[in-house]
Length: 547
Ligand SMILES: Nc1nc2c(c(=O)[nH]1)N[C@H]1C(S)=C(S)[C@@H](COP(=O)(O)O)O[C@H]1N2
Ligand SMILES: [Mo]
Image 1 (cartoon, rainbow, N blue to C red):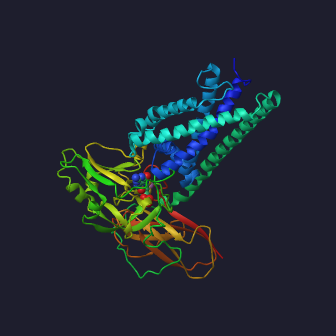
Image 2: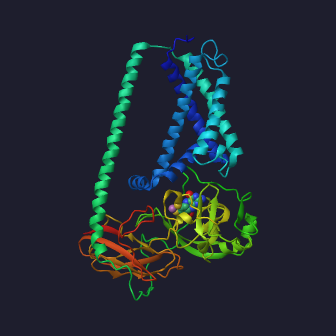
Image 3: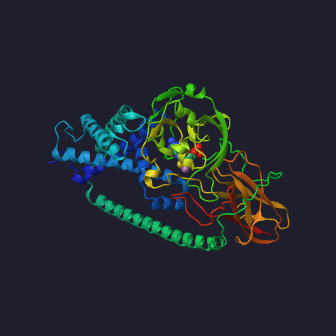
């Protein structure tokens, strides 16, 4: 017999409510601790694993429908899930304690004791450390994470105890303040609540399917018709290779500035909520693996090494043609080959170099790529100390391949003799990841109206990774004819090229298309492809009305 007039369902509901309230507090505490002390955030660990193991087709779908915000939504969904898991444990705990009437777990009036809260906290702590974290590949109690097992054990314990105590407090408060068992009205209320929930889920389901179908239909046909003519007239290589003819370049409003300021530079990372804040004073960089004399440097030792300055444009592999995940900066850093040489001789079989980072991100590059003179460990961006969100204290620059391989917040450079696969590569993204040539129209913007017979410019940027740009062409007739644009002499072969074409249109509607040619004569690929898994291709176009 129960010692209170509550039914089993009431017990579960009470515990669930108390668990939910306590779970929300505990979740907020976990976020605050991870922000201030860099301790574990379970949502971050789980989200990172989900993003990594998501099928590329689903990734593509989310990218298309939701865009770059997808990772934030994922994070919030996981947070809600985390609160619900807390609530579930609260409900089960109350149910269990009341059903089997544990002696020290509750008092005469059915109020739970602190001991119960602490036991629940201990159970959650063990489940998280021994089951949940290993399942997210973070190791037992986060031993595989850079923050390590000790930090994880302590922060999880703090959050768990806070959860346990608030849960007890809320549960007892609810018992004192709520009249038990109001039979009929409440049953009716539960039933109508259930119906509401079911209808809500149906609406959401229909909505998702509708959006998916609509995207599929419009996305599919749109790209098919617009690219077919371009593909027909396409020559993949032009010889002789055009000679770039750099002209006096007018500054055109709305054209990207040649060097992107640090504040305007795009940022991308796998981290759902926050990027690591690395303390330069305690930071160390280790160079080890298949080398004869591994070593470790601190920040001032690294900064004392000879540096080179290198302008380079970065582009994310997730960038759509015409997209904004591209930026150009002047970097300072230490040539990676110099850092590797200091580690003595390479052991036979060494094939790749793995970069490990403070956010547990990793990626690898082939040894031949690692030894190129333009592969650099950067410490400055546009002559300022590398900003935190761009990888402070140090990040890799490896021109010619996508931003993904430009590992930020690096802590370890490891030479390996295996075909190591990095964070995104384990999920099917390109491993060599060479940049696919791209060009973008910055102005006029799509859908804009322009005054007829007034001189204006079509202008934008073109980028080929490390192959340089020899020509940029603009077409106003769906690719039947092309007019070469004027080019601004770029800062280096590793950066984008600014281009512009004077234009004085008559009234009408126009579709403007751009394509680029690199210094080997390769013509930009007109065949449309999404970013997954090798980077996007196709031509950027804008439609404008002239009146
Ligand atoms: N440690 C770490 N480095 C990382 C990432 C990351 O998630 N973690 N993201 C990569 C990706 S996908 C890109 S496009 C570039 C972006 O660099 P930026 O933010 O400086 O523009 O960083 C790369 N380096
Ligand atoms: Mo990226």
